[in-house]
Image (cartoon, rainbow, N blue to C red; front, side, top):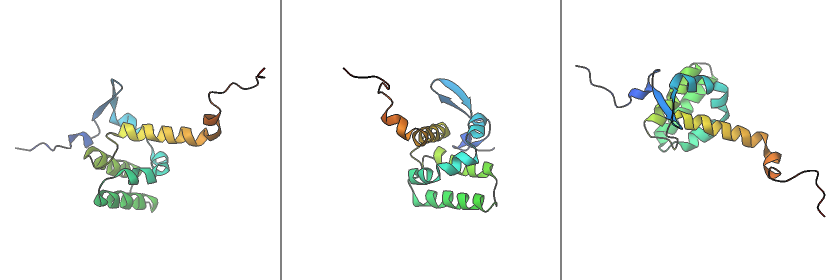
Length: 124
């Protein structure tokens, strides 16, 4: 008899809920491509709690950069640490949201400062 692993959400068919909507893991994986994962590399490594997890993810990044592994393996190496609870992120959807927030902040550095101000108005 085969024993179920506690980490069964690592497979491709795992679903997560995000704001009450069921999101398939495959959808997250396609949205979180290698370019995005490389963009938030430092933040992902800093979010890891143990030194072993940091070492594993750094090695996965280095292997990806030297083209020894595919981006899917890099994604699942990060996902494995997130699912096991070794990261400050609780799901891969949070990693995707963090990327979106970081991208928004880098694009709108000047816009955030002036966001709530009315332009082209003369105070009397």
